[in-house]
Image 1: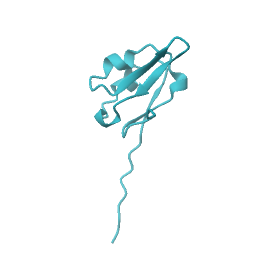
Image 2 (image 1 turned 90 degrees about the horizontal axis):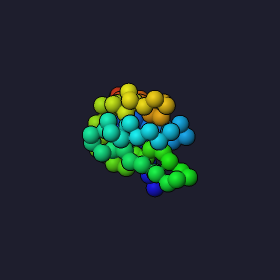
Image 3 (image 1 turned 120 degrees about the vertical axis):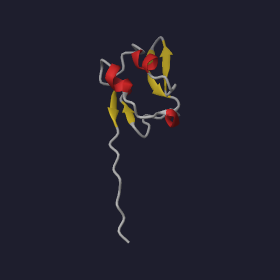
Image 4 (image 1 turned 90 degrees about the vertical axis):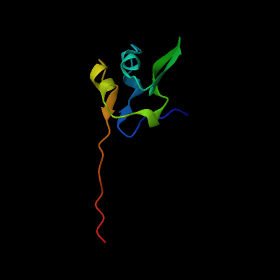
Length: 77
């Protein structure tokens, strides 16, 4: 099963129009395609390779990507 998010980004495949601009922009190979004639959208194929550069967010014209908010918990002992 393909993931819908990395540590830094999450995707909404329903918004994807299969332009593939994000795949070309991502040099880490994080993103992949579902490219069937009846079903096309982006997927996250290598989540561990995501560095959080957010180039995919910047290039996507359809708002498929959202940043994941990182919350650092402080533990009092």
